[in-house]
Image (cartoon, rainbow, N blue to C red; front, side):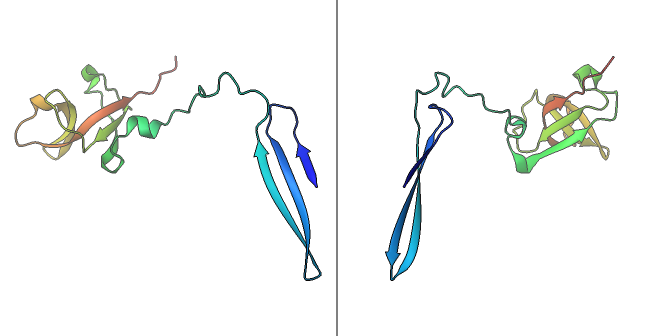
Length: 136
C-alpha cells in the first residue's frame, strides 16, 4: 500500500509504505516513512534571518560575567546613569583605557584603568552598559 500526502507540490511528500507479513501464522504490519522534496527550491533559501541571541552577543565569558545595577548619578560624565545595568567581564584583559569596576575603601567604584591607584583591586572590565529608554 502506498499513500501520498501533500497539500501542494512545494511541500514535502510523505510516503507511508505498509507491508503485511505472515510470520508463524501471525499477522505482522510494518510501516516505513520516506520523505522527498518536490517542486523548486525557494530563491531565498540560505538567506533566512537567524534570531538575535543576546547571551552570545553580550557575554563572552559566561563563568566570569557579572551584572551590576547603578544607583547613583555620579557617573553621568561617563555616559552611565542611575538605573543602568552594567555587564562586567572579570576574565577580560584590562587595558589602560578600559572602563573598570574596582574596590576602593570597601566600596565598588567605576573608572578608567589608567586613573586607578596601585592599592585598589580591579574587579572586572565593563563591557556593556544597558540604558532604559525614558518615556516622555
